[in-house]
Image (cartoon, rainbow, N blue to C red; front, side, top):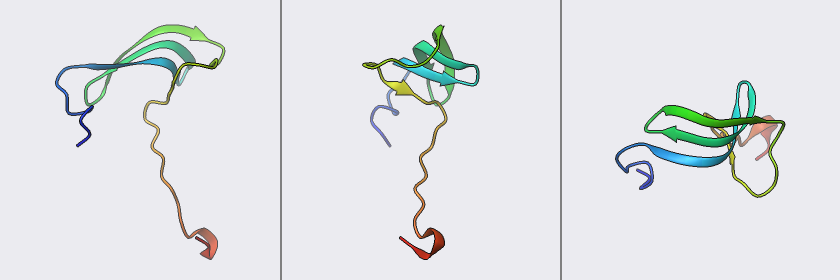
Length: 68
């Protein structure tokens, strides 16, 4: 298991958080699930801070249409 995820207690990440309502500049708190999102609504992300996409899973696909 990832060492970061195996630490006890809540963890926090700060940056631009994408929610169903739009972007928030703030902090996300989580254990094995998201427990809180704190911050303020913004129009969109700016440069310099991380983009946090809760629930996003990158699934690579190989072999589509017979190609790899």
